Amino acid sequence: SQLEGALHKALVNNEFHLTYQPILSRDDVRIGCEALLRWENKALGSVSPADFIPICEELGLIIAIGEWVMYQACSQAKAWQQQCDKPLFITVNVSSTQFKRQSVVELVKKVLEQTGLDARYLTIEITETVLVDNSESILLQLKALRAMGVELAIDDFGTGYSSLSYLKRFPLSKLKIDREFVRDLPDDQDDHEMVKAIISMASNLNLKVVAEGVETDEQLWLLNELGCDFTQGYLHSKPLQAAAFENFLRGYM
Ligand code: G
Ligand code: G
Ligand code: MN
Ligand code: NA
Image (tube, rainbow, N blue to C red; front, side):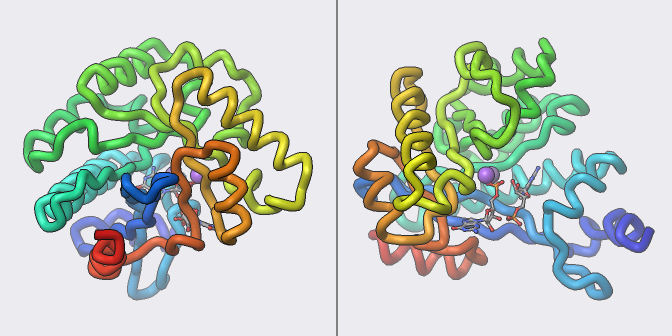
């Protein structure tokens, strides 16, 4: 297809860039961002990662693109840390295909060495599909990453498979509540109870909680009240180009 042909050339043609969406702790003291991949192609325009990432996985391009994302994200985070002497953290999405087709441990080791970023400022976001694969190799990789000091977050929590046993089995450090559960807060009583239960469970399992898709002050207020550790969403900011994120950072100095 046209999309496939274009994707094969996208990396060499410099058509990818990252955007950065702020993630703030409850007291605004800790600040970080999620690196989100964007693809701008002359003929196709801007294509959503939700559409092109699955194709990259089929074509095997996800390995090269994933390496580019990891390097770009970590070197940007390191540069921002040096500019603003704040312990900014960065989160990078890594798909199950990446874990299956390459050693994410070796990739992360190499990139942290190249960029000088301290492992504890890198969070890798994985979805439940990574965990339900139930692969020994993935479990070993996740353990090795944690042993290096890298944090692991489970993304889109609550939308995947319902088994909670993996929360104990895998060395996770954060849980990101999917925005589906945040959207109708504070009014929806069921969502309120669900989010409350997730936060309480996470706290008992020693996991930090990040709420996604926070769009209103009322949502933020309730999430803070319920003990949510971090929030992310349009209320703070939409995903930003690097220069715009730097401006945002200055506002929090
Ligand atoms: O930013 P946006 O809402 O368009 O992202 C859509 C989806 O693409 C999200 O689920 C997000 O996790 C995923 N995504 C964004 N950037 C990356 C990336 O660099 N790697 C992988 N594997 N997924 C990404
Ligand atoms: O699946 P993942 O969490 O990685 O997807 C992140 C995507 O969610 C980003 O691409 C971003 O565009 C989208 N997003 C971030 N904040 C909000 C928000 O407050 N509301 C909505 N509707 N989408 C958001
Ligand atoms: Mn994510
Ligand atoms: Na998510």
